Length: 269
Image 1 (spheres, rainbow, N blue to C red):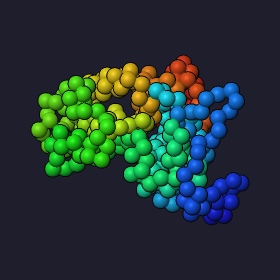
Image 2 (cartoon, rainbow, N blue to C red):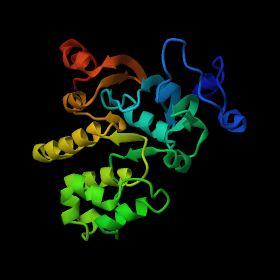
Image 3 (tube, rainbow, N blue to C red):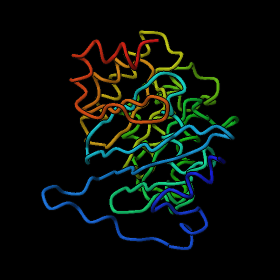
């Protein structure tokens, strides 16, 4: 059976065309005993090219909470982030994504960014030919309500030292700092971090960890995808573990840290 048709035929599913025609809608009504989640993903299905990667993923994140989205390579972590942020690939074929009452699944990527989704991709995407400061200023052109430059430099003093240096000539750790700072230069309600420690020396990882701890103290709602599960779990309040595109654990981060059998089963390489 064609996999795309199988998803379209699921009870209650909507094709992308029908979803677009439906227009924006109010967030689902909360249950009688619990307040609605600040962020909610419901039954996400997404393809990366021809590969069926995200297979019914769902989880909630409360306002100010940090969720570690974990799993082995190929489990669907990055594809889930990209589906949330509404970037072109993977294609979200079914499911709902809500942020502060707004239906992200009915939006284009630029619209999701304007309502507060800030994606820091694994490859950082520093813009060539622009200085550190110009990369930050460019992020503020459309959304000037984020952190002012001096506030950014207070939290990222190394960027202050290199504000006139071309962004792509920074070290890997400095480029990661710039990518995070650029997201914060806009008005962000949900920060999505894709492999922030990837390829960095341990001493630089410690610097990035300190910056993320500061951001955590500010109460910014965050989802972090990270292969270094232990580092992510120490930062996070809760964890969701993916395996073969599905959620196999959703609970306190401490529970994963304390359960070596669970880590070996789903996170060990």
